[in-house]
Image (tube, rainbow, N blue to C red; front, side):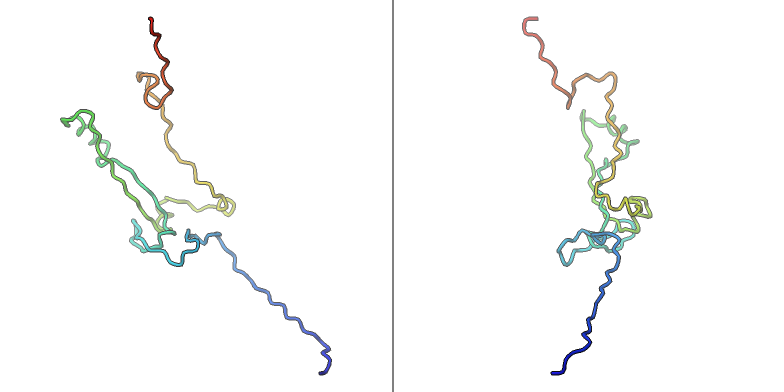
Length: 144
C-alpha cells in the first residue's frame, strides 16, 4: 500500500439546542404517552402531566346564603357538605387568568413550591382557652 501522507481528522460538532426547562414543561419521566384532559377555561385537550392542576374545596352554597340556611335548618349544628373539584388548565389559560406567573431564568430554577397565603388563625377573645387542637388543660386538684 502507498503511505498515507495527510491523515484527515473529521471533527463533528453536535450543537444541542438550548432548553428552557429541564423537564421540557412536562412531568412524564419515562412514560411514552400520557392521556389528555380538557382545560376548564378553553376546552383544549392537553396532556395530563403538562396541565396546571388546582384542587378546589368550596361550600356548596356561598357565604351570603349560608347564614339563612343555618337559621332555617331544623337540625342544630348541621354542617353543610363541601364540593370538591379538580380543575385542569392549559398553560396559556393559566397564565392569562394569573393562576401561574411567568418567572425569570433564576427563579425558574427554584424547585420549592410558592408560599401559600393562608390567613393565620387568631382565636376570638371570648373563646375558651385550650380548645380543640390546643395544649391539654392541667388537671384540677382532687381534694379541692
